[in-house]
Length: 399
Ligand SMILES: Cc1cc2nc3c(=O)[nH]c(=O)nc-3n(C[C@H](O)[C@H](O)[C@H](O)COP(=O)(O)O)c2cc1C
Image 1 (cartoon, rainbow, N blue to C red):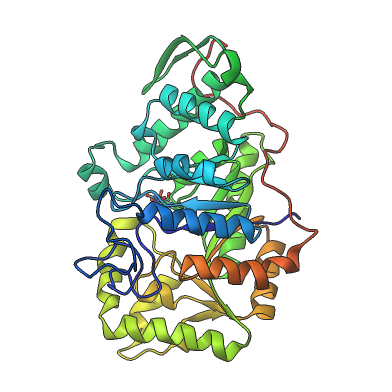
Image 2 (cartoon, rainbow, N blue to C red):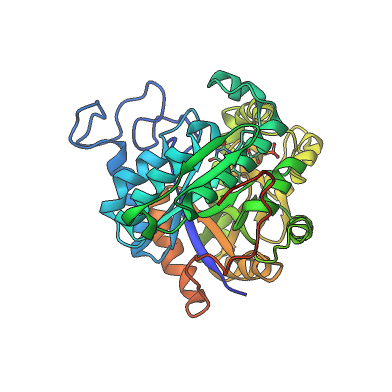
């Protein structure tokens, strides 16, 4: 099996301390003074938060990460804009931009992506998201129901592929129509971005089965991940596809020794408990998705004074971040050696792409790059599309 490593850019603030803590870098914390010696983080300053994101991106590629995931949330910087700004500051890093189909028409997404791909040597990856929460969708103007959003996404990708691979594409669907458009001229040289998606609802799984090159997951116990992989593979086979691959997002607290790693987990945990972050987590959870992760279901049984050991669901797999409200919720905590072993364990059950990040993202990109990634030299495979297998289009296309 191949293996590849991406990291994450912190688009809604650095998190060396709890989210919102004014000791964090940049201006993504309410009301605190600037953390910078130079920048006041005023609009028009010479140095702004994008400069920090640029540093993280450069650190990531210097340290051997193949790409960077960027989360799209109404409360964060907009990822496609961020990677357009950073593309020319980086040389090799792929950027995973998340967006929802309702953000763009298929044609606008195709044209933007083709331009980006030509300019960057095909370094764009799409994460097609559909919103787990109706409440947040309504806030930003999308009134489709959860399952209809996935139906729309399926059509969206049908049309995107149609425009990408044909000069005169015709389509007549429920959400989209096209009458003869398509990429022409030098734009045709660009590669369609690799397609990622996530979500554990049936609608999300079916969408992934039809259209995703990579199905992304938040880390859980390896048994849960293995079951999810088996389910998605079976669904993809129904569409004649055996080329779907799997990505896992998991934080990392790795140090020279187990003791040092646990001390850092303890620091976060104690701060979270002291500041009542558990309540923040509970408020946030309902807005995210219908399904609780397997380990979240046990959070209510932890009693009044849980300790960090109550949150190891597997050796070195720690869900304390989830308990105190720091997404994605699960982290590998341990010595470098143990963390490498756990990555191999997830790789063996079918995870090809790991999104690894620590706090602060800049320093931890160096740490992971220096102490974890070198163990996988020779096994890495840059992310690329596997030879195409047919995808069933569910509406007529006159290509
Ligand atoms: C690795 C990963 C990255 C994700 N990135 C985003 C994101 O950037 N923006 C977002 O709104 N949701 C993001 N999600 C959430 C999913 O796209 C999806 O909306 C959520 O899991 C709920 O889907 P469901 O209700 O269909 O199960 C991400 C999920 C995973 C596992």
